[in-house]
Amino acid sequence: MHTRGRTLRFTAVLALTVLTLTGFSTGRHHSHSRHGSSEGGGGCSSSSQDHDTSTSSGGTTNGSTHRSRPTYRSTPTATSSATARPLKDGTAVLKRCASVADPYTTVEVRNPNGREALFTVKVAYKDRTGFTLADAGSQVSVPANGKATLRMAAASTGALDRLDHCEVDPRATADR
Image (cartoon, rainbow, N blue to C red):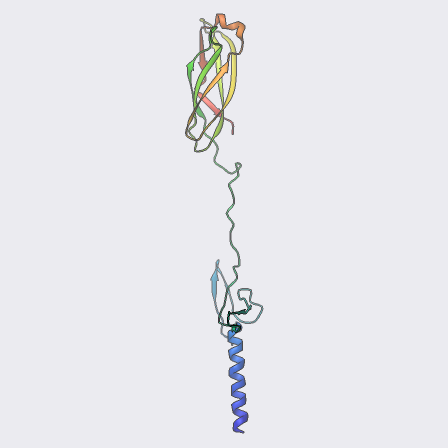
């Protein structure tokens, strides 16, 4: 009878040890706070337990290793241009008006944005009475927080002999 009791006790201890090493519990609940949820421990239906056993270099089972699987990880995504802040308009300053000798107008465009942008610049070619001989528009790409020089051809070379001055719209419209 003494041997039978000892065998039962040994079997119970062995079963408890196996259950403990494989991640099963004996009625106690383990609470894991991961992303605001809590899961009860125990049983093989628990998704937070990994019941894999690894073999160490000595060939024995390493039952004390317990790893939790990640439940959910947010993945960072690139910000699309649709959700990015809208671009601010830039500034345009006339540097040189077109003439018969050089039929190009030079304008400096500044970008106040933290990223490269495309700007539209508008120029009006006027005679000495203020009459608009021609209007022109052109686009230029300007680096982030930088400036670019735009050299644009006069809209009408026939009007250059009557051209008195150029007027540049000081607002360079951001296009993208």
